Length: 384
Ligand code: GLY
Ligand code: MN
Ligand code: MN
Image 1: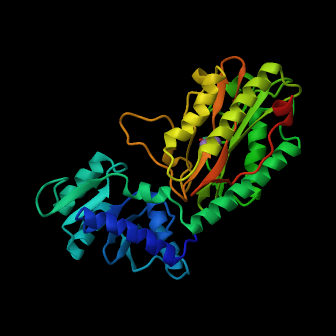
Image 2 (image 1 turned 90 degrees about the vertical axis):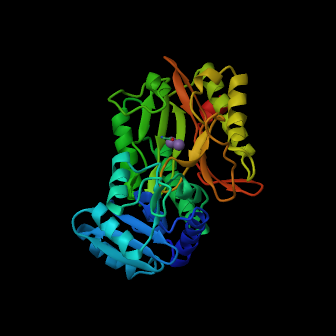
Image 3 (image 1 turned 30 degrees about the horizontal axis):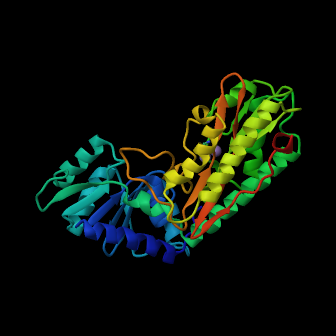
């Protein structure tokens, strides 16, 4: 359930309206469910949102009309909103609305709308796709993704709560013998998922990862019937959705006594993570944060086995803007800004030996960061 107040939604909508105004867009069609949720608090699976300078039209069907009525009667009602009941085709209803309001320049989320749907909209609205006439359908990339990257105070409060609850679950998992020799990855993952549900999470943010022994060298392993054995590294990576917002945490533990090499790799990943966290601050390029972790792992001889980015934005989606990774030739570097919430999760994955990943969630501050997750590390791996 999304609980942003009307005033929060007003600010988000205002930013979108400004971005539309600079592009001459009179009506913007939002079709990505989480973008609709961000702007309206409506969290059903099927809807369209049309944002004009003055109004907000929420198009949805019978399955959601009662939920919309409830939302519109609550303190979280979106401002200046009208419900348009769709009976039949969403695309036809959209075209009717566009004609009724008289919008000529209509924007849409090009990154997410299938080509066939964009063509259908263009045809039904009689507005050529990226045409140069007065009536046109304009493909736009990334406006709302960019807005969502910077969390408002309401969102940070919920993300904090999500991370705090996840940390409670993780501490209990680590203290209460959930990860024990003889247990399968599958059983441990089911246990974690059950605990997340009982802690108030709506659902897991992604499929829970429990990877033991050689499997821990697979960054996105799926739980199997493999059993935790003496000397295994066990990677636990899980997250939950609370109040619509994701948290995401990884801890690596050892079953029994760690080897010297396990301790060396663990220490290198931990130090890399601490360096990356220390590098976080508003104004810093995200690739600099990645470099802080990566340079350390390279120096430890583990650069080749750290094959993914250092982190990612966290919000309504578990992976969203900004990307915290190596600089890419085909994308402008993203700069961290106050209010971004990101993960910091370097790892090292050694085929046949096992893997280590340590992940925490942080909010970017003007002069540093605040770590939202709070879960102890494995003292045997850290101190030897
Ligand atoms: N398990 C996905 C992630 O940590 O990004
Ligand atoms: Mn994770
Ligand atoms: Mn993550």
